[in-house]
Length: 83
Image (cartoon, rainbow, N blue to C red; front, side, top):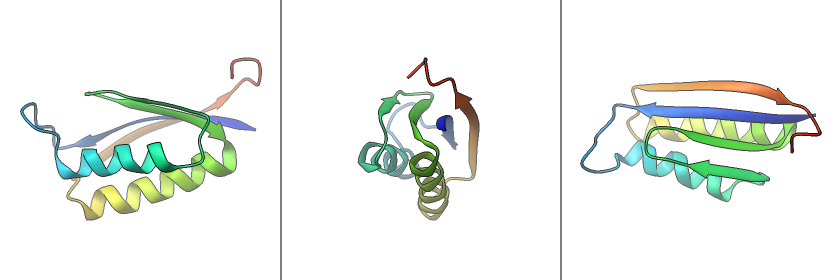
C-alpha cells in the first residue's frame, strides 16, 4: 500500500521559516520516501505505508518539540497507478 501525506505546521511566520517548519522539512526530506514536495504553505510526501507512517510519527514528535502549536495533516491511500 502507498500513502500520501499533506501537512502544515503552525504558527505561520511570513518573514522567516519558524523552527518547527524547518524541522518538518528535515523530517520528510531525510525519510525513506519516494516523493517529497516542500512549499511555503504546505508540504506533501509519498511512499510506502510503512515509510509514510514512520515519517508522520517523527514529524509530529519533532515539530511539536520544536514549537508547533498545531499540525494539520491529511493522509490518503494512493492508487498504485498514480505513483
